Image (cartoon, rainbow, N blue to C red; front, side, top):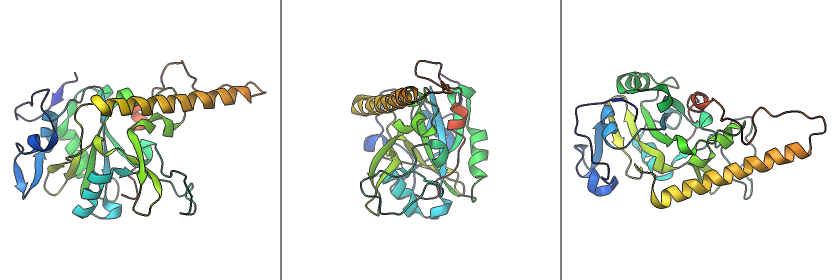
Length: 259
């Protein structure tokens, strides 16, 4: 496991549940909401073979209503202006599944130890619109699809589909990857009760299926390219080759302009 610089708070037992029972043991600072110091998230789950990303909410406002909506629904997939069309899109699922369109990379286990002081400096000086609330997400690298040259396929397994507030089928970053919300004015992280600290059971099965689906999608696209390639052009990345060395790119993107 990567070395993590954290607080002196006690480490949680490996089989401790997140859920309501666990949240009751976390100090309360504002009514019934649960808050911890940034470095204390190291005690809540493993960060081995993972990456941490952030999503500022300044575009939608710094209200707590926005935070609660994201905890409940997930982070809405950002769709660049160049790709946006009429809202009347029938049954098509909209919104990018490329994390670089939706988040800013904060850390990857491929970088070495996790230094919360450096992370705090980034969060307190958020580069996009000075967001005071930053949604923190943990993504297991086992579900990063490296055998593709298409960004939206690399991180598609982290997204789920459901209707947005306008009734449009939309891609959202799965709420179960959201640790909580960091507020730069208080220096505290409000924990998301929907976060899943362990990739096990039905959640693991669902992620395995999502990854297999996008891998098959990539395979079919490559096969179609090869069949319709009379000039013998080569692809930059093929099924069965070494994964692309682009994890840093996958966690160094931009904020979503919406919820």
